[in-house]
Image (cartoon, rainbow, N blue to C red):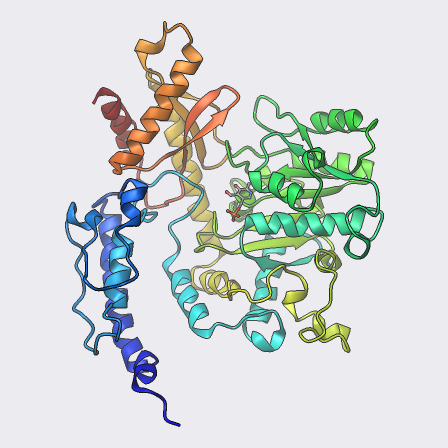
Length: 509
Ligand SMILES: Cc1ncc(COP(=O)(O)O)c(C=O)c1O
């Protein structure tokens, strides 16, 4: 039985080489255009129109309307190889996708907490896809598994966790928060939830900040605790969850039939980038026998900066921590570490055994089988991205990036404060800035707060549809604010001036 030509052609290493060279050339050209601030950050299309532009059937070829309105990207020469039987060209298609996507590498992208990924890590990601080692068991990741454990040790070390700490990488902070909460529940519920079910004991709850990321609220519903599973404690004027607020929430919960088993703190909250006082919260957790989980999905990266790591003081006392490398560590999504003060807790989230996979007969061997610690069975070789990047650039490089992001945020905040037509919501602690435009015409409006909210919502929508900058928005207790997380270390202070001028121009238009 011979291999059919179409199969041989698709797997031909020479075709891969030729297409790969064309693709890298085209992507490098695209990166250079973005870095030069050419083209849109957000090539906005009304969603219904955008949907019609990407037919799976490549014939007849319909150029994207997004590209029709812009300078055409330098499409590399077509494949020297025979076109695929279906008629599409993967490289051309990928180039078109890049041109129609939100350009995180563009220095005027100042929106979500998602970085322009480090190119060396992007190459590692490609190799991860090519090797496709699933990693649930050591034999499906003989390089990737020890590299992941090395990277986990490195991350534990950066946060100052004591010997005996450990963890696992998983796909995203949301899944990371779920994993940590499952471990917390198994360790502190007082009954065997895994074996006997969630209702074999009293209902459970955790104390959470009123500004916790929505994945925390979701996790509590996923585990079946319902609305009562989250006891929300209000934040202070700096948007931080204080020990006093936790103690008050605990006192309120005392009369309930719920058993409170933990506190969920944030090191870098999503809305404002506020850092909870972790040392104080660890004191309360210790005194009350509670598990302390720190959602450091965003702020964990501050550990790399001598200037900013103090904001994480106390994090080493947490029982579990989530840290997204695809935020401040500049990795492509998704690379999330779930770290435990006691590595044994890493096995409690998923206490189940799958005998066909894991080496039950030799428990020591399962230590290498990472599938025992994650919801995922097959997962990407995500550790190799970070490992390659650390080795290529060195630890200090990450500190430099983070210092620059925080400095850009401080400079944006300073410009907002100095401007009479903008208002700063709060001083940024790291690289997230919340601000709003104050239209002088609104000052005397009957309901100023509602009018300001509507004005800034409409302004943000205009920014999105214009596409030359990208910012997001957030609802704070003081009103709706524009929000910029300065993730791109290639941004310059002049881009910040241009952003404010751009907003003013959109208001005038
Ligand atoms: C504090 C915090 N926790 C969790 C998450 C969720 O992380 P992911 O998007 O990786 O699922 C985010 C995302 O922005 C976040 O800011």
